[in-house]
Image (cartoon, rainbow, N blue to C red; front, side, top):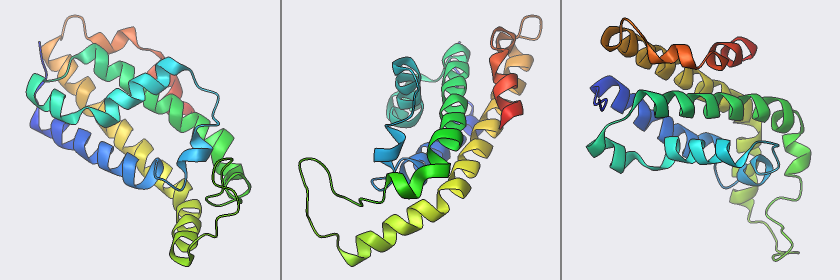
Length: 165
């Protein structure tokens, strides 16, 4: 049964927007790609954050929402432990890459990069709060619709991941 709950749809849009503007933006993306997470986790995170138009028309399934929540919580955990403590040193080179060495960084880009680095822990916390809120809303709907056998019980790792955040 497809989920077309207006609150969940709105929350999914807020998650997408926050993720792209504040967590996985052009200044931080390079550091995030260094995280040790599986391809499947990246794929689920991409589904959560990229395919809004498709799901707005088709609706969501409980299983896919829970898989995406697990992926997002895994991402958050790795970003907090692997990226956040070292973000400034990881991104110290600014916009320089192997293909684009020696390019002088514009002053406004330097300022925006420094702001992205400084605000990354807070933005990651906001993303975590949005994911927790999504989980609560989906779980409540799941219990209401599937009261005898809620689907969230197949995903005990969600509770474990939430505890460590």
